[in-house]
Length: 127
Image (cartoon, rainbow, N blue to C red; front, side):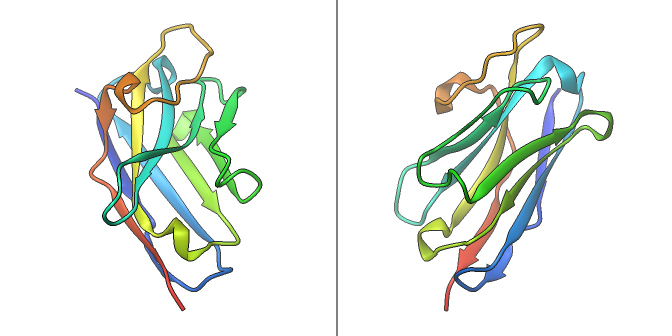
């Protein structure tokens, strides 16, 4: 069974940087495309970024493009989200997600296209 665990959340000020990590276990990591979603308080969960199993294809939500970077370290079975120039609007619970891809190198942006989810990591950006 695939297990995803996020870590690295915390409280930061606007303009600061923060990095989240998602640890993957229970299956072959390179069989899965990966993504990050977030849920701001009082709002619905939304797409943030995604990467193919190779890490060669990446896509970002417009709201984070240029500020966030998604990456994966396949030998370590981890995925990361480097966040910079953080804004109060980035405050949310951040979730990593996995979807079985096999040999496919495409990425997915929709929440219901992912089968496995972590428990979430809280990121609070406040002055």
